[in-house]
Length: 334
View: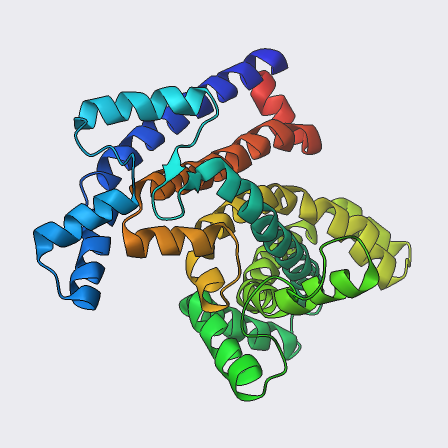
């Protein structure tokens, strides 16, 4: 039964990915203009030539740009290349999209994973304390904070941190993933530089998501507190810290942990503006560059990576959740 359920989930995820990639392709390729038009306009402005001359110069620069193929032919090529593991070619950077993904994805995952784990740890602690001590100042304070950050987009927090801590005070670097004077490698100076450059992007996400996790954990823990085994632990006179961690926390976190993967996929999709604010060379930054230059090849490839990340995150939850929650396992076995 379990193997059959997993197989169905994988097949559903595959067709969802194929459908999403197809929709994305047709949406991207129906955007007016393309990278050639953008470059031609820049050449006209810079050199004062006619549009036809500028466009011819742009085609010469992007030798091999295929503009004569029909939309259907380009779609067939796109899907065929995806099955081969080829995400296409970036017209602006004149390199395979795969090489850009290999370069950018580790930086995005590095920032998102540290942000997610840090925000989750702090939010979990606050949520458990809010559920345990319901009538203290912590509950309304964190609830108000969560409401404020939920209404504030990630990029607004990122821009404020960038303007005050990086641009005005100069406490953090303005761009990049590490000091370019250093040779990449696993040695203390480079690791410290990487953490230093990633500090503000990570802080942006952490500030935005602490309240979210606190309220989620609080709601889950509040229901666990009414269970008989918690009341029995209190009656036995166990220390409240042990009750909070070993009894309440362990059970309350079961449904919350499954949301980690979903939240990671969500953050991957929303990383574009945050990485652009800090000029951090991740997937989001390159997607922003592709959008501004109408680099359809790069846009399609990065769209596919983002969609794939979200679908894999949901698939991971579908597979893992019954393994960590006996109630879900019983329901799936019916």
